[in-house]
Length: 427
Figure 1 (tube, one colour):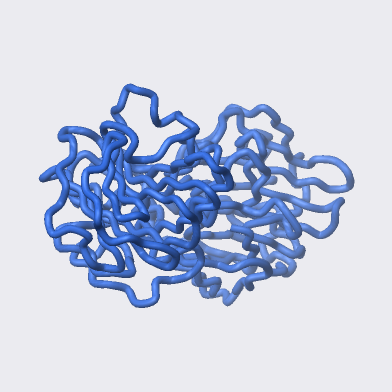
Figure 2 (cartoon, rainbow, N blue to C red; figure 1 turned 60 degrees about the vertical axis):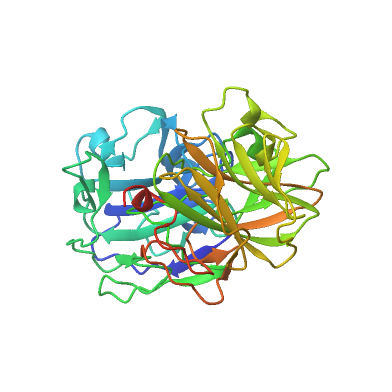
């Protein structure tokens, strides 16, 4: 998302030496500089927390044409299906340089750096100074393509990540603390708590404003990760994925396909696609266990394989490059197609604008793990909704009923079905 939040800090009450950033971020695109937080006074006075174009995480403070701190992790962060919890905790009063700027990801301190320039003791920082501060960019570029949630800034205290997250006693996974008890200090703030609100929840009234772009609410969050289209699947890599990887754009006469980041092997799942444009489109699901290499093809559509099932614009249901059923409802621009995958009874079916295309579902290959998918060529434009309640940046016009209470869709979710998300996989 090319969205920027902004606010100018005041002179900090706790000095410029001690501060903490804590936020959750989910990436959509890789391979470019993308800033989560920055303080920028001029080209000679600026600081950032960002993913570099090599997908390494970096924290830097650049003042008077030199780096006061520059810590760049050795490891890369390329998982577009998960949320990362990032904490940067700084205390320049510490005698040991290694104790001044600490970076934590999912509760674990980063200790291996390809670049590791440290602040000197008691050195002034651009972070927590009276500069314009930006979230989602550095002011005029390096926009984050992804989502952020539960964004805290602490003025005057260097906190450990355990103030903001904790290990789940059952799963052993790092999870969010929704109720945080910290001292924020004068410049401190807490935004993006339960949605896309930039109103400060810390009690300081340090509200942000949207300086560029559109801040879109998403149901996807650190406690319930929703599927998107996967940019790491090779075929998806040769297409254009936009809007948080929820839209497929194809600009070629060859077929291009994109598949969901999450797979499923049991349960009942549903997703919707809004047809924006395109002459050739297939929507459906495919088994990921296939050994024929079709997922890496560059001229591939969902129903062309033995484990792929798709419904195309002409009203045909396809499997294994053959027509299973014809004469079903055709569809075109502005229609919304739902896909129902039942992995308890091993069937698939579709809806057009809320109405089933066939009263009886189609039997599919059993005992596989499936992913949802969309295919198109010749300027196809397909907007998917895996439960976030949006097609592109447009909210569903009137949300249907959803007995599972998981996800927001345009049409009623049939009884027993749910969104493809981590919560949905565990219902």
